[in-house]
Amino acid sequence: MPKNSNSIVSANPETLKSLENLGLRIRANRVAQGWTIKDMADRLFCSQNTYRAIEAGKPTASIGIMANALWLFGQIDSLNALAPVPLSANSTIRVRKSKTKPTAGIISDDERNF
Amino acid sequence: MPKNSNSIVSANPETLKSLENLGLRIRANRVAQGWTIKDMADRLFCSQNTYRAIEAGKPTASIGIMANALWLFGQIDSLNALAPVPLSANSTIRVRKSKTKPTAGIISDDERNF
DNA sequence: ACTTAATGTTCATTTTATTGAATATGATTT
DNA sequence: AAATCATATTCAATAAAATGAACATTAAGT
Image 1 (cartoon, each protein chain N blue to C red):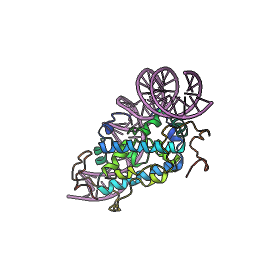
Image 2 (cartoon, chains in turn yellow, red, green, orange):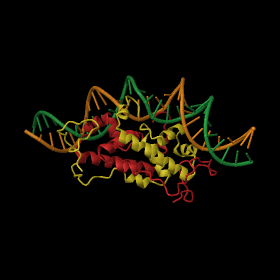
Image 3 (cartoon, each protein chain N blue to C red):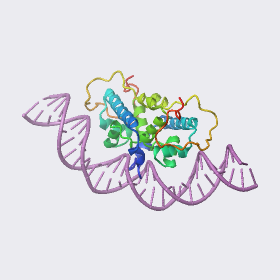
Image 4 (cartoon, chains in turn brown, purple, yellow, green):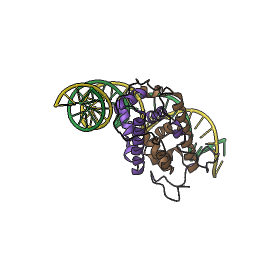
């Protein structure tokens, strides 16, 4: 994601750690399939370096390649379970501006509603 | 993911559909929080257009922003549940070249082991 | 009805993710 | 031991993702 990628450098440590672990699990899945990194790159139509970024948990990697890797593993259903819709989701699609100013990456405990 | 992005155009339809649905769920989460797109962009340190790409399910969006969005929703645990390690994963990390040539995105039924 | 806010679309510019190649290291096979 | 294979690292070149601004549209509030 080019141009002023400050969205990555300011990602919180917990997120970065989760991405690293995700990369390790994807790697484990690849190994379980008996596929090399080259095999994966060929199946994903990307370079080995790009796929390696996925396994390394680099936040700059694209969702598409990651999702396609999951599909190759037959785990697209685990992707469908990601980010479940909260019960508190009401029908009003449109949202008015929030009164409380965004704290830019930090959610106060009383602000998080669950 | 710049330079000859043929990994996206050749992503299979099922993957693309899952990404679209994921975008919709992320949107639902945002709405449930009562946050605008601008709010999200501010919290994620990215532009509104970039975050909009996430909600639109564009495969080119980066993992980092998506993961950070999940974190903002307090759903980092759902990310940790992504791509579980298969039971058949043996301890041998290193993988020898697979005899069967990769079919580039298509897994035969007997090749998929679960 | 008018105003304001949120979303959305488009586009030129800029930063950078991806690529491919080269090289090195470690592990397996013969 | 030699050869082969898989992984890993580095780097210049380049295609494109992200940006920001402008403008349009739609919905909510007064």
